[in-house]
Length: 89
Image (tube, rainbow, N blue to C red; front, side, top):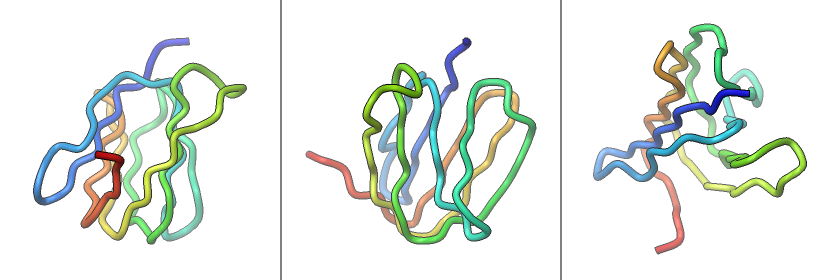
């Protein structure tokens, strides 16, 4: 399956920009998963964790805590604009 282009952005910086297998996002209406080829979609975020699957369903996801913001899926991939994102330095 094709890779999904994923970007995580905060007001301070671009936190992540990479091709991944799948991302699960904490939307205000519930968690949703995004794979390559997903239909266009937009959602606000609730505080929670983004789960990034790099190679497939069987791998252990990297979890990134986020607070507020929104997510957009379009033909280019998934962009998450978070008010805050915690990442290992």
